[in-house]
Length: 108
Image (cartoon, rainbow, N blue to C red):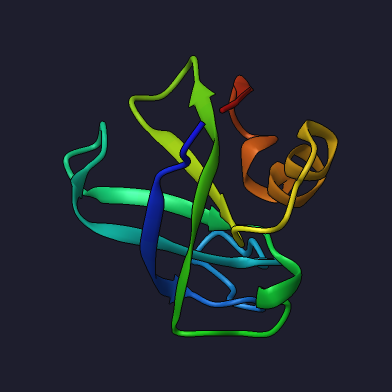
């Protein structure tokens, strides 16, 4: 099955601290041209061995969607084409934000 290849613009690079004091342990950004449930650009977590330092953009494949049952948003998870990441890895890498929501991970 072909995976959706995406170009992610990083607006919260690894190490970024948001207004609530959350420190981002990964690169986080958005997909231009795709609108999420909140009316803003679709948010994306980048989980990849090729993105372990702060970066500005990332090209990869969509491997999972995080559904928030108590929010209007979904978060997409993107990694490099040759990488395989588990649900456990996604959970561990995104729990810094997802712990505030009733979230579930859909592996694609």
